[in-house]
Amino acid sequence: MIKVEELRKSFGKLEVLHNISTEIRKGDVVAIIGPSGSGKSTFLRCLNLLEVPTEGHIYIDGEDITAPKANIMQIRQKIGMVFQHFHLFPHMTVLQNLTYAPMKVKKLSKEAAEQKAMELLTRVGLADKADVYPSKLSGGQKQRVAIARSLAMEPEIMLFDEPTSALDPEMVKEVLEVMKSLATTGMTMAIVTHEMGFAREVADRIFFLDGGRLVEEAEPAQFFTKPASERAQQFLEKML
Ligand code: ADP
Ligand code: MG
Figure (spheres, rainbow, N blue to C red):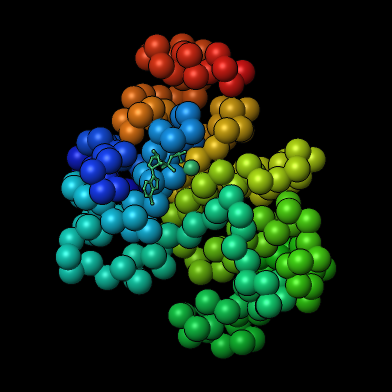
């Protein structure tokens, strides 16, 4: 579903992603882990062109999204993204947060958009918050709304950049549970996370980034018991 070929990304003279090639298959859940500054966010952001790759190609469903002619708006519709800091629209209710893009971009009727939104809010356990403004929600609730809002656009791929890092510890679990249940629906997911237990349990594959390189790609059982690289070993010793 996603094919990355010799991806490089520089900011000015600083190259932060060095020649990354990999694939993510349809339905795969990939956990992207690695030290701070290793390029995890930049890699994820390249996948939906929030960052424009300096070199290389990224194919989504066989389409080269890095080609000059690529339709960025259309590509982004296929890919949902959830950030550390929610980015909900503060002046809209929870329901409006979910219906806005489907009505505006997908031209859904208000009724259809609201019906879909209520289904999604039910799925993340927040149907009773439909008419509330984001400021009245806890961090965990905000993040669940952000996930539901992304899903309202019916993406084929979901990207998560440290979705639980800004949350109080007691709220991490409710968000991970929502992601876990999404994974069971067959959604293709790439998740930057420091939640090693979650990565081990839910991911099909681990990408370990260090210093802008994809140092290791492995199945969780393999990675967490016998990482191939010394750098991954050192990283895990600090994390676990
Ligand atoms: P991670 O998410 O693994 O912490 P990032 O992808 O955020 O790492 O950053 C990788 C490197 O790229 C870091 O050295 C960071 O300072 C640099 N970087 C990220 N975004 C920018 C930017 N917009 N401009 C310049 N440097 C950046
Ligand atoms: Mg980051």
